[in-house]
Amino acid sequence: MTLWLLIGLPLVAGAALLLSRRSGDRIAPAVGVGIAVATLALAVAAAVARPAVTVPLLANLPIGLAVDGLSAVMVITVAAVLAAVLVFAAGEFGAEESRARFHGLMLVFAGAMLVTVTARDLVVLLMAWEVMGACSYALIGFWWRENRRVESGAIAFLTTRSGDLGLYLAAGAALAGGVPGLALAGLPGAAGGWRDAVAAGLVLAALGKSAQLPFSFWLSRAMDGPSPVSALLHSATMVAAGAYLLIRVEPLLGATGWAADTAAWAGVVTALVLGVVAVVQRDLKQVLAASTCSQIGFMVLAAGAGGQAAGTGQLVAHAATKSLLFLGAGAWLFGLGTKDLHRLRGAARRYPLLGAVFSIGALTLAGVPPLSIWVAKDAVLASALAHSPALYVAGLAAALVSGAYVGRILTILWAPAGTAPGDRLPALLLAPLPVLAAAAALLGIGGVPGLSRRFAELLGTAEPVEPGWAQLAASGVIAVAGVAGAAAWTRARTLPENGALADWLRLERLAHRAFVVPADWLARSLARFDDRVVDGGVRAAAATGAALARLADLRVEVSIEAVVRGVSGGAQALGRLARRPQTGQLHHYYAQAAIALGVLAILVIFL
Image (cartoon, helix red, strand yellow):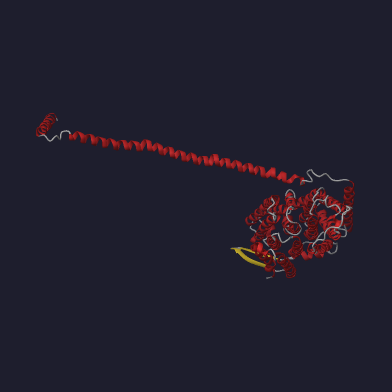
């Protein structure tokens, strides 16, 4: 019952708010926050009780949900971030906004994410995956009267849907490979080459959903959604879903070999490259979006390197940190009306409390000791080192870049600007931020040497590779050096405002040219083929039939009519001839009879 309530409560409440339309706007914030808090309580209860349910879907195809060690951590994380985000949204959204629609979509989305993390098979996973995608489209384009936002929602949806096709490939391959019930735990046992097809599909789906290269650009466009949407979708839920999926199926990745290497290198390259992209952004939310791709890259790296516990620790720490930072960016947008870093110069001085908690989150994101991501990231790097020294070196480079984009942000936000304190922000807007700051600072404790083994036992994963204190010290120094170096650079000069890096490597343009343009050309070509060949053939067949009909009318109908008319004319002529002897005079009749007898006599004589 606990598990059904956990997933059913936000789904049913969210659907009810959506159906209420504008009539539910007044009560929507209170309902949303109340349901989120109740969901958090149920998540804690489920994490303790570890319930599992199985129900029949089709013949020989049961589907199931379960809370095990890994999903126990995730359900609490998702529910906690949901509660914090909806409290913030209650303070941000005014009465003129469609609050029932917003809170309804957020609750349905969170319910789908809870199903995703508790799914035991590909069937349930696919159902929840699709609901998440649909809700993300609606939330990113929430302010639908602005064309740019609607277009951004469509781009995000179509890009992630392209990757989602991999999940269908995986499900089909698992079915063909004889995986009982399409269970996630049974995927490594898929027969023959079907196991490789399953792994390929899952890696593709995960990279697309988690905005890893080459799919990263959709997350840039997703920043057009409201700040609470970014805080939920891009911290603990949608973007993290792909990384969570790879961590969940890590035994499958390890069984194939090549899939583990692919995931590891995709993750570390994304962590490095998108970290550099974050350094040069002018928009605060764009910095956070690029850094999300980068930090998720460490989780994907952990899954590929066999570090399930390390990746989970990074996921939890990042969820608290990034939800804090996105909500902080939303608070500045609410108070100052801008996301532009140049216009946010000195913003932390205008709002000291907001500046302080935002700085804690930013330094955590950079991996500065002793904050959580410092420990969590080093656990990932230790797994990478055991897998491949090259991965470790690339991961350290990505850690340096993380410090760089954080140092640039903090230097701008705390720069002396000579401005007066800002207007007072709503209490609900600020209420969740200190709690998230505390969580961001402390949640990495599970990766500390000595405690990481207990954390792995809690998750039910393999024994982790623990980082040494020398490794922790080295990464801490690198992070601090990145922050300090970027701060000095930012004070001395400005970065260029355009270029490939600032435009997210122009990935959207490349995708447009590589896929949209050819698809559009193909569609136009098929339309012309349909018009000229298929439709033309139909028109030609119709014209041929009409011509044959006209020919039949001319050659057959006309001939028959002529015969009928000839017979009729002949009969009329004979009738006219037959009337001529009928004069009514007796001597004419005798003459005719004599002639007839004469003719008859001649015929008798000669025949």
